[in-house]
Image (tube, rainbow, N blue to C red):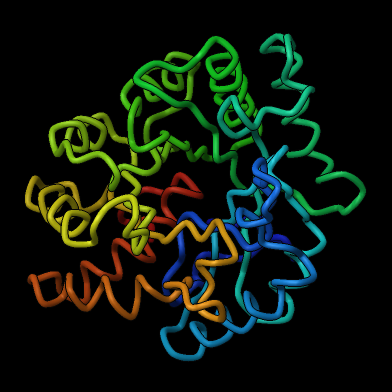
Length: 314
């Protein structure tokens, strides 16, 4: 069976994706609530630095695709994503959905799950605004705390229903890694299969039992803030990843860096999108993770997550 990614420049066969995929990134973003402009990746000002990094990673490590999880209310810019993809020859998968409640736009308000589902399906079917760019994933669907708020619960249910109807997978934002099991319960309760779900930021939660439980249910476990030392050390991230691998769940792990501020860009002295390849994966290899496992986690797993493909199909 042939599987395709829905990218910002059109359908892409997974057979053409020969190199790694960053499973949770931001290339254009505006989460500035403090007024200092730190939590911003501007589509004009920062685009050259972003493009430079993507091109360099394509050339050095074969970077093939980026799952770009900037959604509604997060400063999403589909045209900018299309420009970045075309200019770097790196595929980009755009998203639709809503982040966690402090960042909900007014449209969420008191909208019921039916209306929210319709909003997402309109974008999935017709494209983002007037761009013609169709999202290829739902995310990053947010919650904070051990249990989602009522508004976050409505968004989770609506997103699951839209994922089912639109044939897309769904990636979550679990604030500081918490609440992933509750997210999974809500999403699967709304009809979405676990293998179409990636639970985010699990490398910020030092609880291997939770990671094993998520994977045992069939969900993907995203260790997606690699290099964010102010939140967690990479040493802890590596230990958590190795725990999941040792438990037999290598086919459920995803990796990424979640670059979400311009200060994280390499041009500004940050770790950059390449930290995963230049720093974390060499440490994983030194700990015994072989090339096939690296390919599984960084290429085959994200492709299977996005498409819903079976293990043997990719």
